[in-house]
Image (cartoon, rainbow, N blue to C red):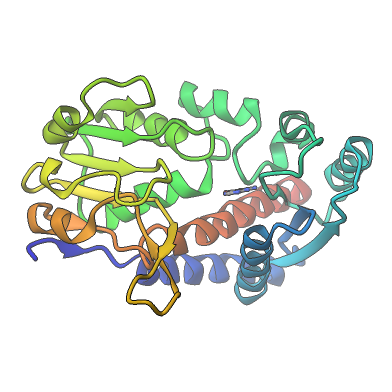
Length: 293
Ligand code: GUN
């Protein structure tokens, strides 16, 4: 293997230490950063994510406010909760875990969150501010990817980048951040022709499509940086029946050609929560500045 492994766990730990320092400084001024975490229903993967978010928050000095609602919750009840959280001065960030159970309108819920507390960066105002180059909240996973690139010493200026996937949570904001960092960006989606030739030109590959080992190692340009956002559970093989977590990139083959690559797990995954806490503390810092006036 030629590639350097970009250690997301280590970088996430560093971000969390920075967050903990900022949170401690705020607490010393009487401002406790607060993050409301809203989970509707019993989706097992979401329950794990939410539990991890709450634990990491507590460890960083951010107060988590749990709102775990039954799957039978109505749109009206959910919007009423968001309105209460918007008005609650102890809440700096509001996170509504997606996907929502069927019957609930995620777009309307996201639009109801105050852009001042939109630590996920999903509100249309946050999206518009990101594309306009204005300050605002940026979605945590793409923000984590930019931090990993920086820590790996990769400056996107003038480089060719391909973002594989165009979700609102990862692909689109990832493209916005790379454009803002002066990369030349191609976004892959289901109608794209000839992905291999696009990847072969790319100096930076960000894979966020949610398909196990979709990006073949042989497509990777020698010396490229590969960031794998995918987390796909597959049968572990070997007859043990255990599940194995793999990314969207064929790791071993890609690592032969790349100069740097993120592993799965231990790459992008740990960064998302760290950046969520970072966004929350930034929001609390803004509250502290307002109340100091
Ligand atoms: N579901 C998967 N990723 C995310 C995320 O970053 N934020 C929220 N709210 N839901 C998610």
